[in-house]
Length: 313
Length: 289
Image (cartoon, rainbow over all chains, first blue to last red; front, top):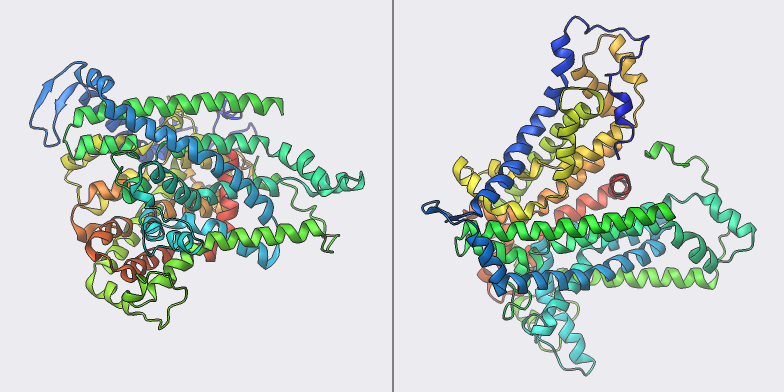
């Protein structure tokens, strides 16, 4: 990461360069702070402060209006560990992550291998694969709720035309999560696709030319050259995807509202409901911290795994 | 590490252009996959052009028998869609402009200047990349209530401007730019402020365009935060406003799909126009991140 920075601590003043600022030691020493000050101010106001005040709140019985503010100590935290809704919504989040990550990585790889070509066809393929990603969550969910609609929706229309029984996708407990996963894959696979595509285009053409001269056929080139060289990118994509999937809220909230019977409610929706529906600010903050801890654990574990593998390759 | 070092110059002309079976099969597979990916969009467009009774016919019909733009007209006339469109535009432009300015300045500060505490502060910002904005919604909403920024543009915009990952990506990029250019500018008497805008920014144009496009898409599509911080329908952005459409239009699917198409179209057009930048931008930002 910051490999280069320590060796370049002086501000661009090699011995030969003129130093017009030598007369202003204060400006030379502190001047750089002015460049980072605007960002730091916003960072402090809208990231550090909520982090600190959220932790503070988690020890109090705070309501949204801030009327009651009595100290509870660790009560919110004790409640959290005894609250089945916390664990079931955390489980839903983890199930969604486990179901959505493999297809979001594998389909993205297949797409990149297929679309790595020039010309009009290449442009059209890249457009089709990535286009859903630029749509807002609400547009995506409006379209997919309509597609899953019983009676005259597209999916059930095709099912009944093929002689199958129709399924009320979003209102059936063991189908709703699958429906959300399918929608999510369609919506967001384009981002991973572009990451893979960039990695593919970074492989020098000479590698393939040399392999072709040595008599390697297309399949050998794919399995012996392309896929091994994509190992690092795959690690990166898995990390990014796991963290992104853990943050699931928009699609589920908009498609099933966490139902049926809370079978799809993710942890962020429970935080939202605790804070904005039940007005338990302190409790919602405590759950937020639990969720944050899960994300950090997953990210750090993945990063360790992935950087270890990067050295082997 | 930067794109400049990639061996783009050694691109050789394609030699084997004859169609072998695997090549043809992969092209066909690619097209089939593309069609599958486009079907939901086309189905939405198709539905939006049907008269309402035709949308709920039991064996589904494909192309509308008598295409009509009636659904679009009623959606635009009766709803707040144009107002939401304006709000989304204002919010996204502000978020993008502010994010770029603030992140460029910070990235330059961390890349090229020294001041006490610089490395600690940079470490703190890097740690901020790990913090998902979703975990901050409750305290952030309280803070916005205290600041009186609920239902205002600034309330929607300011938290979105804090993008530690952008500072990180831009700092990495600046680190890769040779100091010779700014030393030359400095000899000519340029201040550091001048150097940022006349040397660093022009030299970083591709990555700034990429960062800008992604910030814009992210701001336009952001749902959770605008959803929490706006209660007044006239302050809602398109994603938030459309969340209520399902309920208010009832079972009028042509109208629902017409609003979905109108809500998605602006960014589809932006993406079609800037596809090259988007594709390259993901590579630049993603591979380094």
